[in-house]
Length: 215
Length: 215
DNA sequence: ACAGTTCTTATCCAGTCGTATAATTCATGT
DNA sequence: ACATGAATTATACGACTGGATAAGAACTGT
Image 1 (cartoon, rainbow over the protein chains, first blue to last red):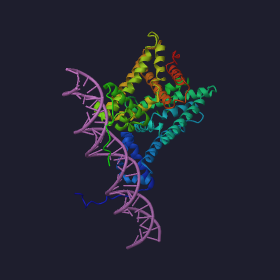
Image 2: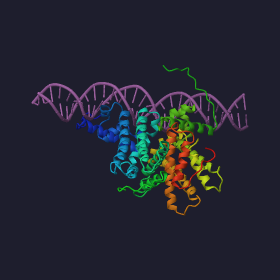
Image 3: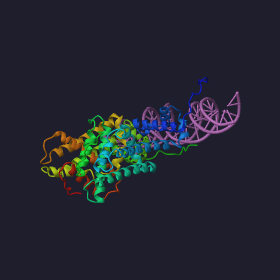
Image 4: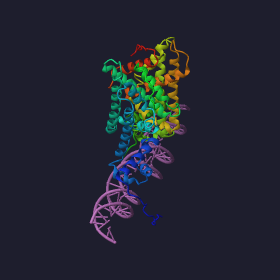
């Protein structure tokens, strides 16, 4: 016995960009909470307050939506670190490096949501060319930025190979600490992870790094 | 029209342990290649050369099998690092730390398969209590081991809080370098990642680490 | 040689997935 | 006010999922 008196659910038309953003936000939230397999078209639509069919009105395929969501999360993180650079004096290489490093260990970069999304797509990077491209781009751009900041430190001999190895070390340290800090947000005191990162990087580069003013 | 002349596929009975191992190995391979969602019961059975129903003869559920596979991968990694300790002189704290660190950057620990499996289950650790338990256990055991080795270094003042922070730093560095090395196996020369790790950890601890003989 | 155990296969089931398509309702321009 | 077009809902479909169950075939002990 079906209910033939049922009416179509009422709805509002939204601006194209807002709908897209809502769907992307819903996908990010679901991936973060339950991994990629939790972000089904039905769950995403439900979270965004629409019906499943609408997703294919805004995205060619479901993968199109989830890849867009992944790219957005990654780009927001690198963007935050780069923006932190503008907060330091342009002629203070030490302060610029410290600001860049510290930016990774506070919101919005240090966020369990980011860790979840990053982890959920890490393994896809091996087979999925689109995901791999996003991964490589954000990853190498970040490491190059780090190497440039390191090479600009005062009193450093000109040695590109050493700069590369130091950038690899510092990048690995930041990655590892970011994972720890995002995975166990309650295991560290406020600002502790950033302080540990600055000390360790200072030791690696033989160049003590002061705490930026905003820690 | 079904083929009523079809015969049952012939098969061999295998020892219980071998069948279990085959199924686990198939699950690991599939997770490594295509993520957790690629390890369906049908795919696992196919890879192991059996039919899907057999999985439930050896494992209570499919999750039981995949969790067992995850635990095995993690335990093999920590076991390899601990075994490396027995290769160094017991009264040589510097050599022991160097051997422990270096073990993470050669086979069987530094392996793209391990990275894939680790990444595929990282996000589940948040919601799945079983996965979380395995994660916490292996993770903290490793960091404690590292802290013990650091505290035993000669000429180090007794300061448990400093030992903790240094262990966190070194652990993060190892994690980050391990991810890089396993994700991009061709981006580094043979032994280069281990050398970078030893140099950086030596700098963090203000205690130069020599290369173990087997690098 | 034969019976019994259990390992293994074969089949079925209810649920969910992503996608395609048709029906309808909202908003806008005139 | 009314028509037109696009945004949104509704429904259907085939494929695949993990799990349950029954039938059969390979060993084992005698």
